Amino acid sequence: MLFVLHVAGAAALLIWAVRLVRTGVERGWSVQLRRLLRRGSESRWLAALSGTGAAVVLQSSTAVAILTSNFVAAGTLAAGAGLAILLGADLGSAIVAQILLTRADWLVPVLLVAGVGMFLKSSSRDFRMAGRVLIGLALIFVSLTMIRDATEPLRDSPALASAMRYLGGDPVTAFAIGALFAWAVHSSVAAVLLFVTLSAQGILPVTAGVAMVLGANLGGAVIAYVLTLGSEIAARRVIVANLALRGGGAAAALMALSSLAPPLDLLGATPARQVINLHLAFNLVLALVALPLTGPVLALVGRWITPPPEAAGLARISALDPAALPQPDRALACAAREVLQMGEGVEAMLRTVAGLYETWDDSTAAAIEAKESEVDKIHIATKLYLAKLQRSTTDEDVSRRGLELADMAVNLESAGNVIADTMLGLARRLDQGGASFSDTGWQEIKDFHDRVLANAQAGLNVLMTLNPDAARALVEEKDHVRDMEQRLQRSHLDRLKQGLTESIETSNIHQETLRALKQVNSAFTMIAYPILSETGDLLASRLTRQSG
Image (tube, rainbow, N blue to C red; front, top):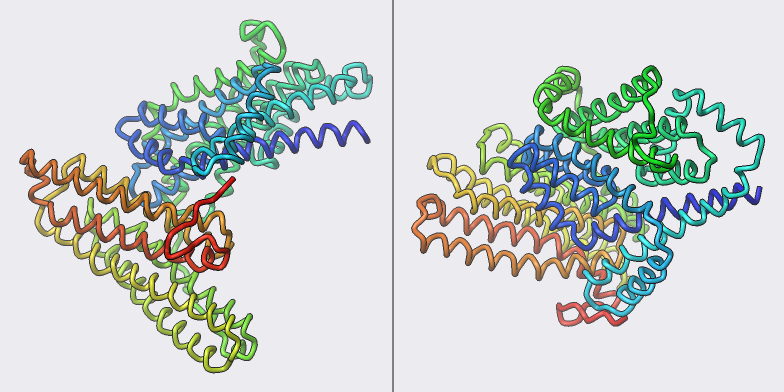
């Protein structure tokens, strides 16, 4: 029992430490990572390299897959480039496992001292997140050492040796266990590190370790598949194509190794090195073989995953329950649900409108206008509901919270109007005029749109969680977006001075689009203000400096 507790605790620490690194990178540099993935779509090989780099930084191919699926769903990334990014990300996760297996006893205290110091003492969010990443890396090394220490006595256990020998002779079972474990812990990196460590201890035979690591590749691909089941068809096709290539490739590799029995000594001198090197070699060969075939693979998957037939729709039922008005807390919760519905509608409009600047589509434009009309109706109903609540209560706290929700609804309705009226009109003008942005200008608009979309999603998360740290980060982003908009406006003016024809023809549309996106960003940022006002983090409409 004590052994089980030690191994379980070490495995839990490993899983959590990998997640700590990933969330630190996402919170500190998500915008830069999204830009890296977007700009890597110019060629399949460049896209694969950008996916590799992002996975190395995030220590997760799944996180890269989710980001990529969002881009494909929004129409800002081609499916072929998306699949190339995922293949590169799979290789990146294998490279991460190689890096993290490096043993350096002096590295742990250095990482902990530097990480804790940066996290506790720095007032800069970037430095705090960098400290978080360093702490996570140190804990990964600590967890691997714990696993080695906990499993050391097991090498002489006859029962365990018998079980491991069985797995060594039954690669299919070992493959299935590896896939299930990777899926269960939601991290193929953590699973591979555990299996390789057990092989290094002499507990897991090389044949079983190889099978389980190949199974972890299948399990890692399944994670992204499950997490994107509700995504758009185009995004799901990319994820399923990667699942077919990575999972099917892993199964084919297992069959080949079992039938041909090649000498694994070529991969390394030790069992652990053989297992981890095979993991890297598999993903490298898979990427090299599959990258030229992304088009045909997606075409095959497209025949399998087709849009669902139109089903009978269910009318949206408002959360504004009149029976809840005598219970203020319940009524406020009802109003908050409606405001969240508004935000989700505006986010959907924002996600979709960017594609119309590149390729106009009447049905998509009509869908945006219909969604804006729905958002307007929700806004009016919510405003009237909150007014009734105000008349029926004398509680100052209820009145304040009601006014805050009403302000959020006003801001979101305003953002919807900006998208449906201003941005949609600008996209229509661009199409009717037969003009197009310069390559640099269009890239700037796509990057800016992506940053605003990320902030919109963060704003809705703040609305749901009421997390002060997330609210502070959202307000800080408002200043970044303002500075970015000013920088992009100056960049556009510089192109005008150079006399670029595309910039001259689309000048007004370009500048007005940047201003509209900044307005939308401000509307979502306002969600955070009541939370920070209540915690004392916001004084005179500015963030207070955070000490320590």
